Length: 418
Length: 137
Image (cartoon, rainbow over all chains, first blue to last red; front, side, top):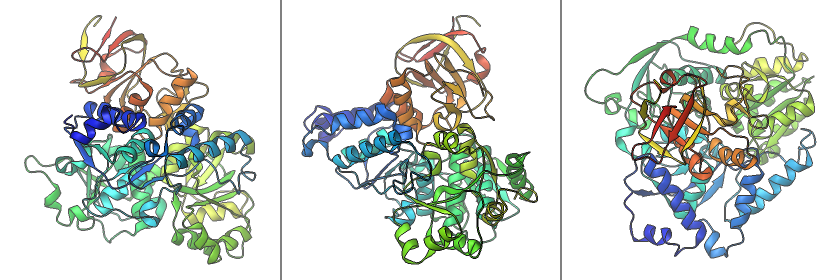
C-alpha cells in the first residue's frame, strides 16, 4: 500500500505503539484485500460487546489504556454498537455477575481510549447519519448496509479491531465500497410484491441475501410499489446483510445512487435477474415456523427499535397483559424519549421489559437461555431468526402483532407463519 | 489429487498441516459456532454438531456479522479454534479477524475449493508462499 508521510510516521511508531499497531493492522487487511492506499474517514463505529470480545479482547484493550492519554485516544468521533447487557435490567435477564464485570471493564477501557459509548446499532436514526459520499468506518453489518445504501455513504464492514484502528488513525484502507467500481449492481431483483410488515421486509432481505451469497454482490431491486420507510429499510438491510453478507443494495428510483437505475448498471452483458414474489417470502418465513408449537419468549431486537416501533408496540399492548417474557430492545438515545412520552410505562404496564443499549443476540443469548429456560423464540426480526439458532434457540418469524398475540396467549402461536 | 497444489488469491498467517473439515456452506463465528464446546451449532449448517477444533475448515463464503473479527482472537486465546480457514470467498471481517488473531487463512480460487478438497483429508495450507496455496498431503 502507498503510504503518505503521516502514515509512514504512524508505522514507524512516532505516534506511539497503539497507533503503530493500528496502522500495521490496517496495512495487513488492506494488502490482503487489494487496497492501493488509505482514505480519510470522519466517523468510526465499533462492535464492542464482551460476548464477542471475550476476556482476551477485554484484556487486550486494557493493555493499551496504560499508555499516555495523547498516545491512546482516538482522533475522530468513535462510537459503539450495543453492549452485552442493560445494567438496569440485568437481574431480570438472569445475567451472571461475571458478565457485568466484564462489561464494566470493557466500558472503562473503551472510555480510556476516547470512545463514546453510544451502544447503538441504529446510529443512522439517532446519532449522526452520514451524508452521500462520506467515507466512514462502521461496524455492525446493519449499520453499514443502511448507510451505504440509504444514505449513500461509503463503508466496508469494519469489525471491532479495524473500526478501532480507523478511530485511532483517522483513515481506512481504500478497498471495496470506498471505490466507485464496486458500488455498481451485480444482479437485479424483480419484485412482484411489495412487503407491508417489518418481518416481511426482513424476510425479503433474507431471500435476496441468499441469492447474493457473498460480500462482493450488490443487488438492485426493481418493481417496488412505494418508497419504503426508514424502519422498513432498516429491517430489509439488516436481514440482507445477515443472510448474504451484503453491504450495499440499490432500489431503483428510491436509493440515492439509483435514482436512475442505469447509473448503477454496468455496461456490457445483461445482469443476472431473479424474480421474487410473495410466495418466496412466505417460504422463508414458514421454514422457521416448522413444528415450533409455541414460544417461550418474544423478542423485539436486531436492530434496536426506533421510537416509532416502540410506539406501535405500546399501542398493541395497551389494555393487555403478556403471559411470557416480552423483551423490547431500544437504544440509549431512544429510551429517554420512550420514558418521557410514556411508551416505556405502557409497555411495562402490560408486563413487557424495555431494554436499552444492548441487543439480544449480542448479550450472552446462550447463557440467558440456560438461566431462564428459554428455547423457543418469536420475533419480527428476520436478522435475529437467522442468527439465534446457533445459540440453541428455535426461532419463529412473525409480525409484531402476532408476536404480541402470542405473548398474551401464553406463547401459543395461532395460524401460519407470516 | 494427492500433492496437487491449489493456489489462492490471498493469504495470511502461518503454514499449517491438519485434517480438513469441508462443506459447501458459509462461515460466521457468531452465527454458526458454539465457541465454548468447539462445535458447529447452527442446526441449518451442513457441519452442525461437528467439532472444528484443530481442523482446516474448507468452506464456501464468509457470512454474517462483524463479531468474527473479535471472536477469532478470543477463540485462539482459549485454544479452541480451527487450524486454518480456507474460503472460496472471504469478506473483510474474516480478514480483519485473522489479522488480529494471527490466524491462518487463504481465499479466492479458480475452482470451488469445497469440491476440490475431500472431507477428512490431511492438508497443508501455506499462506506465506509466493502464491498462497492448499494441497492434500
